Length: 432
Image 1 (cartoon, rainbow, N blue to C red):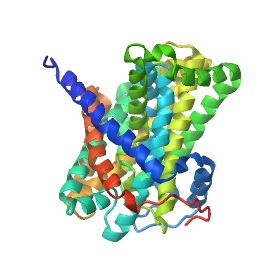
Image 2: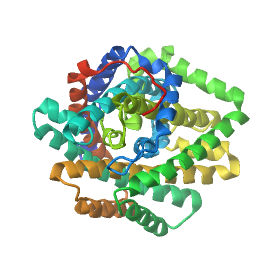
Image 3: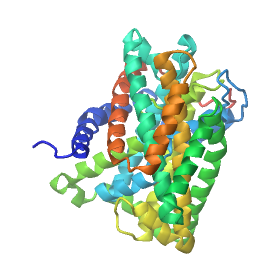
Image 4: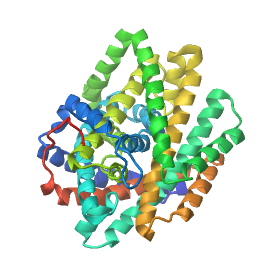
């Protein structure tokens, strides 16, 4: 039966695209790549130590980006409102067990992120191109495949990375703080204008915004866990047991729980999309390996830290598992300040994502049209931010999901075809 509305039609495409094709490619490909890396993800403390060591370098690349700025920008693009609100949606659709499969997705995604970022640096040095397009030119033996990928990246940056985030920031500020949507929309527009002023603006903003965002959200979440240690431990136990409970196997329920968790995990950490490769390849780095390790750390922080904290707080709060349970959960768990806390957090998540995705989209635009002049893209980006702030872009959300899936197809194909060039990381903590 044909869909009655454009939104239903887009949802059908998403259900297909993010069903068997992309998930098998990401999960199957991710397991293959992880095995090739000898499952280096298990050495998480070495990964974090190596990342911190690399971030100490303040060398500025010809793009005007330091290692810390590239890490912050990539993390900003990855840790969006989906890392908070998306957890509520995963719990609503797949129950507590879906979070376990988000962890599985992140574990696999760490391997994918290492490979795609390492290849991005390697072929970026050889070709002078920035991002996944560098290795897509290699497998495509020309620009055609890379241009198609870059086009999807530009469209995703305008939709999911901009309009959707602008609307989320306005909605959070209005619902939680009672600020007029028009005032908030003007604020989002000013922030976006400041972001697009110069080539260093996005990375510079993320350098300042992301640490503040992380401290605010992680600190508030840990406060809830500290107040309810027994309930928090029970929440973690429930996440694991519900992923394999007998009820989950009845009527194909285990498939729903598993697929929903993996799908939401892929949306959250974006490993396999190649979206953050342009950011990680933009700083002054001598070692391909160090940027690959940074990519692993980004996935870990996004899903294993941010998403897990969100899930535990929601479960501890005892609110019903619905799409907006993150907002309700923090509001209940933190009492009077809870609503303000989650509102400010969501606003900062959204603004950081806008800045991070601007960087990604601009690099893709420059690749398509050549050169560094991206004034037209900057103007379009600002217009989309305003439209997203004043209108509900529900259709844009679905369309952007399609572009994300379409980015994953050529990107994963490229990474897998070049996987023979990947070796396991050595976790050299001396930095670059």
